[in-house]
Image (cartoon, rainbow, N blue to C red; front, side, top):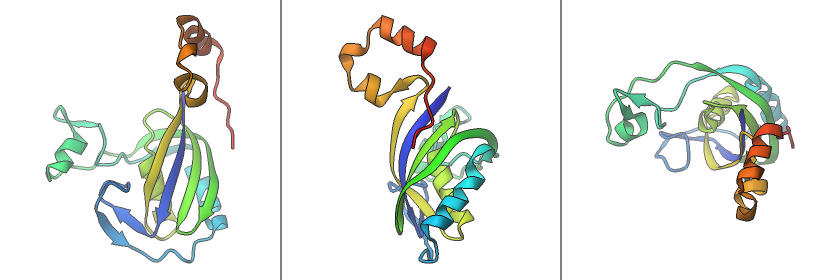
Amino acid sequence: MSNKYEAKGCLGSATDTLDSSGRIVSLDPHDHISREDLEDGLGKFRGNIFQVPPIYSALKVNGKRMSDLAARGQHIEQKPARPVTVHCLQCTGFDSPHFSLSIRCGGGFYVRSLIHDLGEYLGTSAHMTYLLRTNQGPFSLTHHALQPEKLTVKVIEETILHNTPPCVS
């Protein structure tokens, strides 16, 4: 099963949470990065890749969420990189320092980590400023979540049995 996201990022600044809810931990030059640079960089993150989960995540350490421990200021060992799959990854907008992405990926993938890692790959820093999950498995935000009258057992069953999310721009 795959998930689809719309995300936005900001080049030139990193946060401790890898998103805009966090505290800025670095500011870096980013004016040298063009849309073409960003699009070329995305190629490194498509397919089967390894990704380090963020400290601020729901992963557990001794039965406690890493994000809860980090928020309390406790030191947390970074989890090792693990395999994830990125089926589709496209730049849908670029107005430096801001950019937008469309992502279709497998489970266990962290968009915040992608944006952070993309910034590092481009020679700057970056953090996520917006995230919307538009598909989870066969369920889509536009066809299922926003039309409650269609959430019948029959429609859910048909969706599970017959729907495969496409790779769309």
